[in-house]
Image (cartoon, rainbow, N blue to C red; front, side):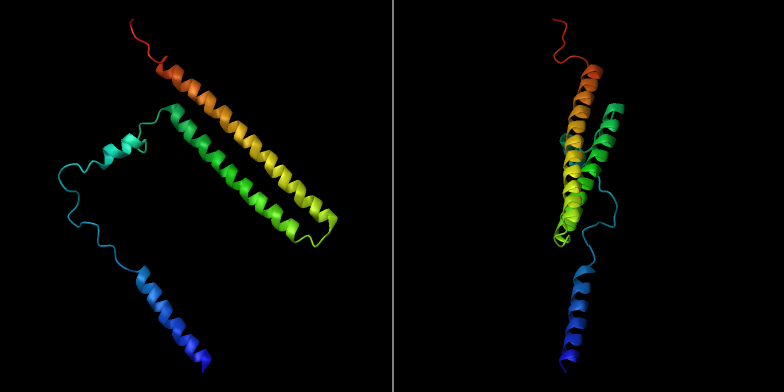
Length: 139
């Protein structure tokens, strides 16, 4: 009896969850773009979301993305090292292996942060050379 009741409740909850998740979005207009500007593009440009990227800007974006991926890899390695440490069951070899993994991941993070700082400094220098010195007037 209890199994039948739980099965019935599972069906009801599943139906309710699917009903909530499958609601149609009625916010989109079927008439296409309206006349006039809403100001969203201007706001996006003001925040830097829409920009005309130069070569240095594109390279900067690629490098920042790669460094972000390396940061995520650091997080995965730290979690993996912690998992290995917790499941070592007191074996000193496994504990040392997990410690080495965590230490190496931390060293890798330091290298990533330093490389980010160097890349940021070099790209800022390139952009300032490309744009010319700040405040340069005819005097």
